[in-house]
Length: 318
Ligand SMILES: Nc1ncnc2c1ncn2[C@@H]1O[C@H](COP(=O)(O)OP(=O)(O)OP(=O)(O)O)[C@@H](O)[C@H]1O
Ligand SMILES: [Mg+2]
Image (cartoon, rainbow, N blue to C red; front, side):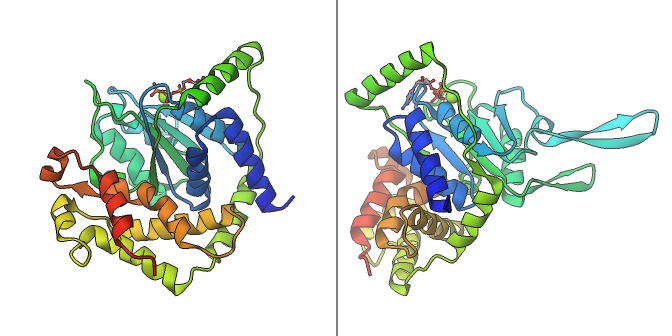
């Protein structure tokens, strides 16, 4: 089976388990293939956890779920040094982060230092404990979920930490037809629970990643991508009004993210070159969580989503 066929099968299996969310499914594959981490945001009951757990079950690699709660400690994520009295030596006991696929569920329910422990591992692919560094596995894919409805006992993720996520996907309520499908799926599963067998191996993922690294991006598309990201910091060439709406624009990490994600999407669509469509399709997921709208804009109900919409309208495709 070709790599393309393997990933089509993975995509189909995900679409069967999580109905009516084709974009979420595509973004999960993009994040996996672009070697990044993903944040899924949505109201309770929209199958965030289900989507991530299904994805993990379809990848033939070690998996661990971490349920974030207010009483969690950093060592509960990274692991800790255990003292052995007989040998008078310390031994490192790896925490749940030492797995290939990690579900960080409801990440905003743990305090900042716990979030930081995970985010550090995500950015540096290693954990330091007792003065020693321990490398994380070759395939290291974190999918986090978060509920945007701020409640008591939740902790905001600072923008600087959000930047560590390659992309953030927001999911919304389904329409009536999809709601009906969910209902019917739920009934079928009541009678016969879903069984999932792995479809992709770590080797599949690694070899596809190297194909994606060779994906062609024309200079015109590259210039468009760069113009889009730079415009989040300086919209003056396009609109002076919009510059006042943005307090902080996206970092160069966003440029790299949009580049990698666009190439991965092109590959998933069976192309060996990137089109402006790929860039546009991923602009929101790569940029929104990295843009801080100005206070005055927020007061007028303008969020980073609206800002990216506007940028896509303003920046011409080259
Ligand atoms: N699009 C969907 N496809 C299939 N099942 C769905 C879908 N949306 C909701 N469901 C059903 O809703 C249930 C709730 O999903 P899940 O627990 O994953 O939600 P969640 O988004 O993680 O919620 P919370 O924020 O409360 O943790 C699922 O087990 C599933 O039965
Ligand atoms: Mg959940």
